[in-house]
Length: 172
Image 1 (tube, one colour):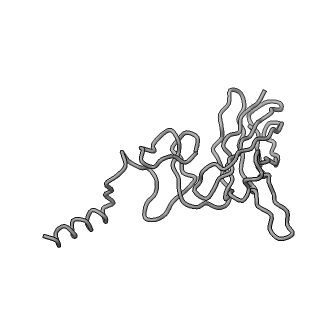
Image 2 (tube, one colour):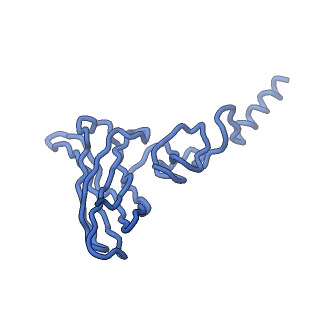
Image 3 (spheres, helix red, strand yellow):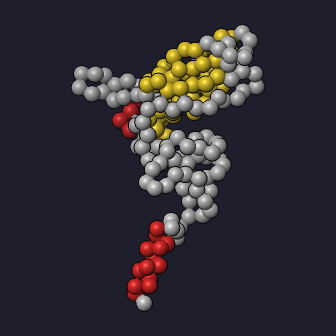
């Protein structure tokens, strides 16, 4: 009887059965994760006990490098933003860098110049938002420019592990 119970537990564990949570998860498995996966919504991390096929994106684990978002629609013109460099705390004689550098590319189909507001989330080790920042840039159609986006609360820099463009939108 004990052997049967142990065998049943092993089978359930190997098939991925879990006794907690609700619904399904669209995230990875096998020990791998992708903190930038999102099936819609804001891209912020949320409680994994809920179905993650809409609303806030799901994510866990570590991340590195830059994040390339999809174009963000606006009424008349769109632009994209890519993190080039994230923030970093002071190390030795090197001072802290409290602004992320984001490469913004204007809508190539737009006419004239457009002003955009970009928003960046500064993320902690658990992919949670530690701080945010925003900046403005004016671009001609299809033009690109690197923009510094400062942290709102630079005192939190030691907690930041990654930076992510949350939104680039046309601003009147």
